[in-house]
Image (cartoon, rainbow, N blue to C red; front, side, top):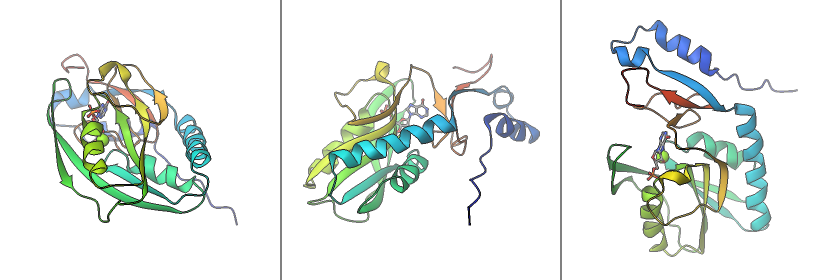
Length: 207
Ligand code: IMP
Ligand code: MG
């Protein structure tokens, strides 16, 4: 029996729903999102990325490490497109400072459940922006003696890069705009959108 496809709210529906709650803040009511990458494009690219990774490691067990919370949807979709032996783990970090002026300080807030020693690790991130988070994580992971580490990111914003890091697998390279959806948030909202869109905060907002 064919299973029904996952119902996913569109950006428009989601915005309509959120305005129905009449947000207390005027700024919130002025927020709008313009679709940048559709759900179909995202899913097609993730299937390709899964194949690219498997092509590079045809027989190896791969340990996918997702960086919470932004990578959850990307990681689960990527993992389900991959053949062979796959295991999952998660890590969480927080960065100090606001998003426009990063202090470059990153703190580990949740560690992995299991050791990565001797494993082929694929770090799965939602977006590579300044690169400070990834630089920190790679330093932490390398001390733990994995067999090798590769990095897969859904989005890459190269214009904002400060740290000398790069991803081995990139879904989409995007311009220097603040994006939400498919795991990416603004003040913890919009992660559940199925498309990636550019957030505009309206006249009074900063972006
Ligand atoms: P980095 O350390 O500057 O590379 O930042 C990485 C983290 O910042 C990502 O994992 C996201 O959580 C967050 N981030 C960077 N750019 C955006 C964006 O455009 N929208 C939402 N979150 C972002
Ligand atoms: Mg993140």
